[in-house]
Image 1 (cartoon, one colour):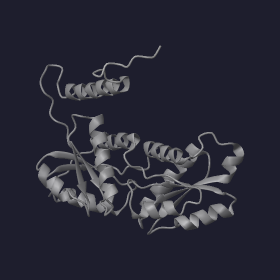
Image 2 (image 1 turned 30 degrees about the vertical axis):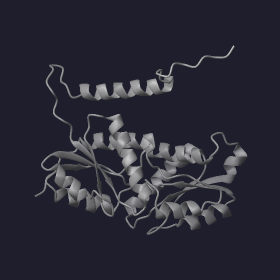
Image 3 (image 1 turned 45 degrees about the vertical axis):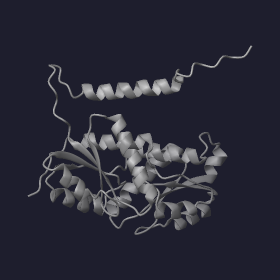
Image 4 (image 1 turned 90 degrees about the vertical axis):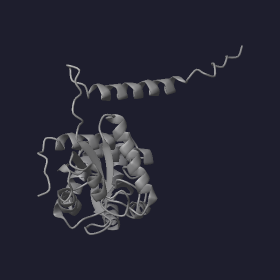
Amino acid sequence: MTASNPPRDEAPLDTTAHLMSAIGTELAGRLRLVRPDGRRRPAPPALVLVAHGSRDPRALSTVRTLLERVRELRPALPVHLGHIELNAPLLSDTLTALGDTEAVLVPLLLTRGYHVKRDIPELAAASPVRARVAAPLGPHPLLVETLYARLTEAGWPVRATQSERRASAVVLAAAGSRDPDSTADTRRTARLLADRLGVPVVAAYASAATPTVETALRALTARGRHRIAVASCFTAPGRFATQCAASAPWMAAQPLGAHPAMARLVLRRYDQALRIPATTAA
C-alpha cells in the first residue's frame, strides 16, 4: 500500500503554524494599541535603526533584514532606518522626514565610541525630532548569545573534551577605536564570551587599537592554543570582517547579522531608552 498524497490545497503543518504565529503576533500588536476602555492608545515613539553605512552591498541587505525582524517582533512599532554615511537613507534625512515626533535612535554599533557619543546625538539635536539615543548593542548577554550561535554554526564544538578546551581559544575580532570606552566594551564582551565557551577569548582589532588580530593569533599560538577560531564582532559583512575572517587558522564565524537575538537586543535597547527623557534641538 502506498501513502496517499495530501490534497493540493492543504498547507503543510509547518507553513500553517508559521501563518498562525504571524497572525497571532499581528493581533497582539494591534491589541496593544487599544486601551481597556476601547479608546486607541497613542502610537509609541518610532524606533530608528542607526547603521554606520558601508560600500559592501551585503551590509545594507543585512540591516534591512534585521529591520524586518524587529518589525515582526513588534508590529505596532514604527521602525525606520538611517545611516551615518555611505548609504541611503541618511540619518539626517530620516529624522527630517519624521518631523516633530518622538523617536528612539538605536545605534547598530557594538561599543561606545565617537559615533555613539558625538555623531548620532549631534544629528539628533539638529533635527526637529524629540529624540532619545539608546545605548550601543554591546556589551550585552544577547550579543554574546549571537556570537556563540555564529561560532557553533561555523563548527565550534558544543561538547568539547577537556583536552580540546586546553588547545582551543577565540579571537574576538572588532573594528577598533581610539576611544578607551570602546575598547573596554569589546574586552567586556570578550570576557562574557569566554565565560560562555570555557576557553580564553582575546579581543583584537582591525584598525585603530591593539592588539591586531594577527598579533592576538600569534600570542595564543605561543601559549599552546592551536585550535583558534575568529569570532566576528561586526554587525554585517564588510571589508574589515572579511580581512579578519581570512586570518583564522581554524575557523571563522560569520558576522552577527540579522540573528533573532540581535532583533531582541535592538528592542531591549529601545525599551531601556524610553526611560530617558527626550531631548529637542535648542
